[in-house]
Every structure is written in C-alpha cells, then in structure tokens.
Length: 603
Ligand code: HEM
Image (cartoon, rainbow, N blue to C red; front, side):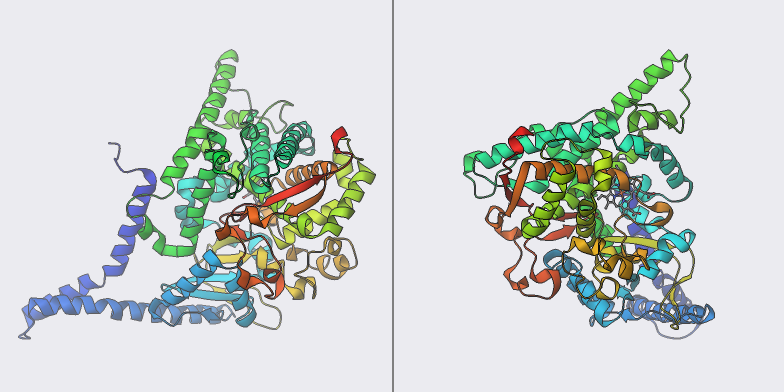
C-alpha cells in the first residue's frame, strides 16, 4: 500500500525513531530491574520512585557508555600504533556552546574563519566533539592525499552522508559508493573526451548573449549582478551540453540592484530562474544538515525542508527527462524493439542524456544522474568565474596583463580555440589562483569504512579515526597555509603558478592544490571547466577593459561587515562575502560595472 508519507519524511521519521530508541533504551532495563527488585525483595519502592530512578539511569548509562567509547578508542589507537587527535569541545554540557559558536561563525563570519583559527591553535587535524559525536577536521595535505588517493578504499561517502543528501542528490554520482558510483562514472566518462569538450560553438553563442545583456544594462547606467549572469550562462551551456536543449535563461530580464527604482524590480517570471533559486535553497538545506550532524532530522519533524525547492527543480527537469526517454523509446521502436548498444565512443551529436538512456530508462537513475551533473557542472564554474571577476575588479594590473595575453594570442575579436587556450599560461595561472583562494568546493567529507589512522609528519604517531566517523577536509584552508604556499599565501598573485614558487612549493607537494579533488574520484569535468572558464574570460576581456565593483548596488545586509577591515589575511581586504552551501557563491551576488574596450564593437 502506498504510504501517505513521502520518502524524505519517512527517512526522517526512521532516523528519529532510531535516535529515540538509542536515547531511551537504558530506561527499559532499569525499570524492569527495579520492578523485579520490588517483587522479589521487601524493599519499599513506590511507582514514582521507579519512574524517577529509571529516568535518572539515562545520564548514568550514557555517561558510562561515553567513557567506555573513549577508553576503547584509546586502546584501539594504541594497538594500531597511533594516538587520539586533540579534541575540541565546548564548556557547556554536550558542547552545545561550541555548536552555537560554529553555527554563528558559519552564518556571519568570514568563510572557514573559526576552524582556521582552531587549526592554528590546536593543530591541522583535530576532533570536534559536539553533542557526544565526533567529527574530525583537517587541512593537512598528507591526510587529504591518504583519504582521496593512497588509502582511497578505506574512505567512502558513506551511509550517514547518504541519509543527509538523499532527498536532493538521490543516488547520483556525488552520493554513491561502490558499484553504483562506478556505474555513474562509466556512463558519464565518455562525455568528457578531448573532442567533446573542445566544441566551443555552444559557449560562443551563450557568451555573446551574456555580453550583449551586460552592455545593454550598463548603457542604462546600472550595475549587473555578475553572479546571476554567469549562472545563467552556465545553466544555458550545461543544459545544451547535457540535454541538447538550452533553457534560455539568458533571455529573461536581468535583476536590477536593490536601489534601482521600484518599477524596475519586476518579479521573476522565468522557470529557469525559479529553478536556480530552488536549486540553491535545496543545497543550503543540505549544508545545514551536514553541520548539524545527527541532530538535523529534529529540525525537519514536520516535513523535509528540501521538499518544496525540489518540487520546483523536478518540475523543471522532468519534462526534459521525459522527452529524452520518449526519444529513446522511439529509437528502440525503429530498431525493432532493441535498445541500440551503449558504446564507449559516442556519436557526434549525442547528448549526455541521449547517451544515458541507452544504459537505463529508469527515471529515478536518469533524474539523479542529471541533477548531480548539473550541480557539478553549473554551480562550480559559475562560482569560480564570479570570484575571478571579483579579483579582476580588485587587481587592475592582473586584468591588464590578462588582456595583454589575450590580445597577443587571440586578438581583439577572434574566437579562441582549444590550442589558444592551451598556450595561454597567464590565463591558466589566473584561473588557478582564483581556485586556490576560493575553491568552488571549499569543504568536503569522507567516512572511514573501518577503524583506521591518518598520517602525521614523522616522527609523530598517526592519529586514530574510528569507523564511520566523518572526516571533513578543507581545501579552502589548505590552499592558504603559509607552510605550504610561502609567506604570501594570502596574497592574490597568479605569478605563483609561473615563477620559482612552483618548483619550491607545488612540484614537491602537488596535493597542496586540490580544487578538483584527486584520486579515483577526481572531477570528471576538470578540462571542460578550464575550457569553459577560459573561453568566457577571453570573451569578457575582448569586450571590456575595466571592471568596477559596485558595493552600493549590493543589498546592505550582504555587504562585508566593517569590522572585518584590517583583519589579518584575506578577511581584512575582501570586498565580497564568499559563502558556501555545497559550492561557493557570493552573498547577495557580485554587482559590477565594466568599461567597454575600444575594439569591442567589432567583436
Ligand atoms: C571550476 C569548476 C569545477 C570544480 C572546482 C569542480 C570540483 C569538483 C570536486 C572538488 C569534485 C569532488 C566532489 C566529491 O568527491 O565530493 C568534483 C566531482 C565531479 N565533478 Fe567537478 N568541478 C568543476 C566543474 C565540473 C564540470 C564542468 C563538470 C561536468 C560538466 C564536473 C563534473 C564532475 C563530476 C561528474 C564529479 C563526480 C566525480 C565522482 O564522484 O566520481 N565538474 N568536481
């Protein structure tokens, strides 16, 4: 019989039921024991005393069980020749004060700020102990290398991650392990061959639309939210690349700044915009769940918080998926009822979706795969290009050198080719430096499948990590460490990817730079992303020769707090507020004006 409770809600109820049993199970044997005692002896025990003592057994039993777990962990660590990592805990019972501090820092602080501070006082790997639960945190490149590459089979996304993510990511590539993950990767990999990813026609059309849109808005005298614009560009490019059908989000009106006249602040009417908003909202819920640990289902007692945004996302995706399945059915019909065999090489005009339906017509698998690739491919490149344009607005000398390279290699109007992009060393260094300071996936997590250890520099003993405990690693923090990148690690300087610093820092230790992950789960779309981002930057700087950040166009509550000014590192200089759900974005958008290059009219 179909349940009246939807999947995410059922899951939440299951998790809560499990947690309630876990929390209250000691009362049952305690009450039973006390009742037996009353029956078998003359001890006077009124019922209220049995209830009271049974309830009091809870902190005692849980206290003992925590003590036993700690003791066991220490013994296991010793047996494995390891030690326990330093533990960060709060002052209040269950460290709820620490959870509140971390949440506040996440909501109102500079990205990774508080944990960065702890990394410098406690160490580059430590345990955060909140609500009697452990979460290991690290920015140590050797640990990340072990997790992602050398000890890959010991670390998975895992069940707890799956429970958090399932209502949005389903069983797609980001949220699967083992055979399911291999299946997704095998289906998708042929799409990222060099030939497929160097077709620039698609980028060109959408980049042209984006430039025209910006010029028209600048001509009206208003700033443009570049983050919104580039998200439309990547959405249009991604939908065309993946589905063969562009959603034309660039066709609808761009938003005006908050201080533009009210009659211009028209409400959004485009399905693509609703989709983008809902998609971001769902990812924000996922981020909250990860941060809350086992507590998150209690915030969704009255229904999954991803249900409403996912309904919008699905309304957008489902017709596209349905059309692809119908196309595949038609081909099957024309083929005498046989599905054409899925091949490693794919046809010239085949889209990812056309390719996927050769493997399966299961709507759930198709939906999850496509949605995951949309997150992977769209938000990451949009976030990175947003940070890149922010840097262009702050470092005019970098912009000048980039334009110089572009004009020298491609000229003021010609469309760049794959070979042009390969030869443009400064452009690649500029993109890498952007990804270093603002990696699109700033935090990530893995769970060990068994009790294990993570390395520490010799001669220190490794740290012990119990099975199924999250190990969060921060590429964002790792990319800023002065011991990895030198004393100027916080400076924005693309030359560090070109001069002697490469040999000094990066070549001996390549795992210090991991914007695309590493090992078997390395980003499948890395080259596609470099091509797309390079192409867009070239086109942008063929059209414009100056970028100006317009802080007054940004809603006041999204502006960088004055209190940050003068703080050490990037926090003290940044004029945009980087935030992250699953991927990085600028709070409130990135409002800019640009000056048209004298040659741009000919482009
Ligand atoms: C600046 C752009 C990009 C960055 C920084 C980036 C970064 C990453 C990172 C860090 C991961 C690992 C996630 C994890 O294991 O939890 C990943 C995975 C992945 N990325 Fe990208 N990505 C980018 C663009 C793209 C694009 C354009 C596509 C495809 C169109 C893509 C497809 C994928 C896929 C399919 C995976 C899953 C790999 C797996 O789990 O086996 N990415 N990416």
